[in-house]
Amino acid sequence: MVSAWWVVLAFVGGGLGGTMLMALMCMSARQAKQSSRVPNLNSTPW
Image (cartoon, rainbow, N blue to C red; front, top):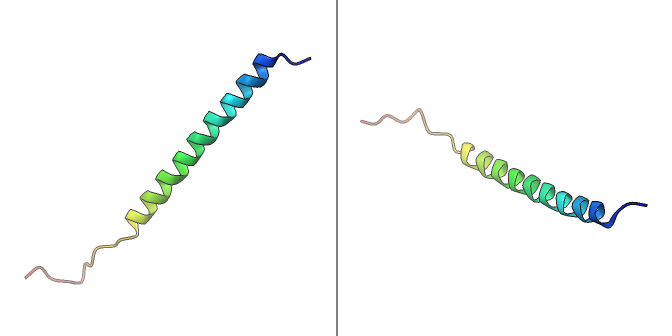
């Protein structure tokens, strides 16, 4: 029989892993949104 501590450890570890995965996905989406703004290289500064 599986000890209750292993079940608790797996539950907490899965929760932390899911949180880290969601944070990475949010950061990558934010980075992609920022990099989608391309500067206009055809305009002249003078």
